[in-house]
Length: 463
Ligand SMILES: Cc1ncc(COP(=O)(O)O)c(C=O)c1O
Image (cartoon, rainbow, N blue to C red; front, top):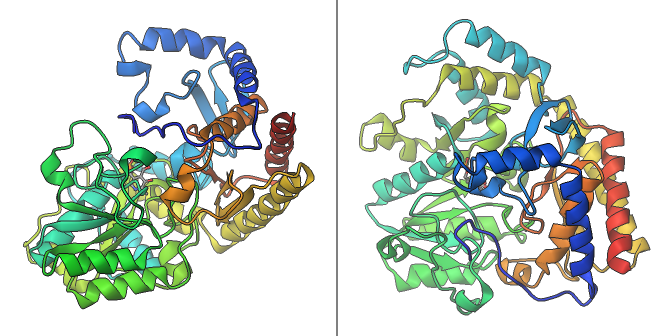
């Protein structure tokens, strides 16, 4: 795997014999549509490392520089409008410039945005998260990375043990304890039933890698084996309850409850990384959707309605370690008043039952219509949706873990991304890895533009 987490070459799909020239043509069109982005990108490389503000913003063939967003649309510096299904890597569930967020943030800005002392909005947000996710005590941070870092620290603090179980293919942010086996190449990942722990970036000390035991998703026996082989050493397991950094991989029935029970039987804890799934797959995330409550839940992304905010929730036993001072959960910007005002408006005014019902109608429409296009073009792939999230899985069988995902030809995801982009729909780059995100401001016309582009893509692939 490259340092930026970009997946490597995989098996070439038999359904896609001549993709390279089609991709070259689409990349050419992409570049011709974006002269201003190209010019800004050239200037940027002199002052921003790599010419962007995060390594995963450097899409191929070039980063797209944006000017603004409104409702379900975003606009690039060349003035081109896109239906936004990128969603800022899972943030923009409320869409852009949602009136409730604009009002809440505007009011808060005028009254001061930072004190490093709590404001009452934090109470409202914590109360609503407790109601939605069924865990009593909460704290805040600023990014998903901070939330999962606290989760790992808390599991270790609570148990006095160091070893953490992590699922191969899950991404939990960029701290040392979880940047392991994020998207390992097939030839370095070891046997599926006993995956090797592979550093997911440069700069990760081997000592940290050695503290992470890697298992396959949906593999209950592997968790049992790690617990058996390491008696009294496992602090806990962190997992995306629906894997969302390898397309979308749902848990098998009973998987989440089975690993929770195994861990608890050994005095270890379970943390759900709901940074992507929380709020998007249901109002109470995967926790509510699958009716399995872990010891710790990590949230970020969609929670802030576009502002940086994270939350970590836990049981009385776990969060009691914070209350009694055993674990210091800290951060200058934790509970920042602006973020809290935005999170309050997001939860109480934007993500209402009606808004979720609208998203569900669009989910069903996309699922059905994209499936129909694939059938029409006799393509063996399938559509996977989970609430506001969805993707086309370019494989002829369901993907249950990373090893299935390895078999997907990554050029298909890239070509799909290009065709959508050139057709006025902005998806996340890194085609097969990421998924679309609907917002509460999308409508049928937006969905139809996406479906029409899928048909164009299918026709290109079919030649
Ligand atoms: C499941 C999951 N956890 C954690 C993170 C890290 O979040 P952040 O980028 O806000 O640090 C991400 C980011 O994509 C994620 O997808």
